Amino acid sequence: MYELVQVRGDSYYIQSPAKIGLVRLGPEEVCLIDSGNDKDAGKKVRQILASNGWRLTAIYNTHSNADHIGGNKYLQAQTGCKIYAPGIEAAFTRYPVLEPSFLYGGFPCKELRHKFLMAQDSEVQPLTAQALPRGFEIIPLPGHFFHMVGFRTPEGVVYLADCLSSRETLDKYQIVFIYDVGAYLDTLEKVKKLDASFFVPAHAPVAEEIGALAEYNRDKVLEIGERITALCAQPLCFESILQKLFAHYALTMNFEQYALVGSTVRSYLAWLKDQGRLEVRFQDNMLLWARV
View 1 (spheres, helix red, strand yellow):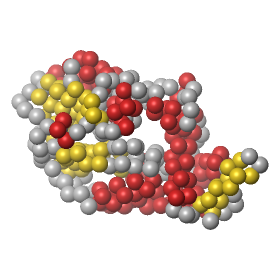
View 2 (cartoon, rainbow, N blue to C red):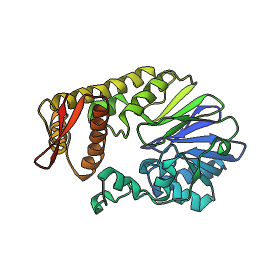
View 3 (tube, helix red, strand yellow):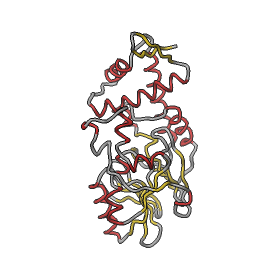
View 4 (cartoon, helix red, strand yellow):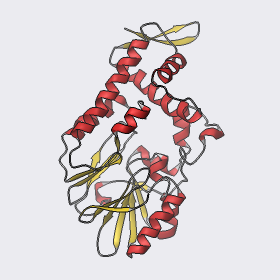
């Protein structure tokens, strides 16, 4: 863990729970794509920088989930680097309590206020094309989170953030976090058509071809949508739908999974309703979801 791996030329990644991209910008200057999940990750990154005689100039955050921005504060304090984040992700990075609050739908209790869902705050600037190193390209990848992006380096290496999960992850956990299901499906179609020398997903193996994995992710999303639609043959409240999904996929409920999977299931319900496949009914002061 935390080994530095060269992908091609000046494009590297640091193996960690969520891969950290590292790109050399000159003999001594480097930038990072994301920063890991906490201060300890930041310390390990700093050791890699020191051992290679590199100076960190910037961190480009793909999105604001805690496992991607957790090293921001430490690395910025130690190096003075600038940090850039896209759109709404910048607000979540400045005010990390927004993540557990959003997931829970209200003030998050202490079981949700921990480093896996709430990073330390960091000073961040809006991500623009002008803020990028020469030859870099921003690739919008919405769906997993609000304004998530990926990056293409001058050598054609594409860092894909969280828009794909590995087959092993999907087979084990089944329901992975998605904010906007429709946008996520569109992103998967976009990713299938991308050209790159190598693809670097944060939670899947580096590959020269990504289309088959993107299709596998797409099929899982559609499967879950069909499962939810079938469950709603009889009108159900959200809690009953969530319980039945956990039972069907043999998932284990705890507060964190309730927030993460629960938020995702609400997003599926909204997507299915907007598609005209589900409708809502209010009965005995309860919102019920029903198949159309």
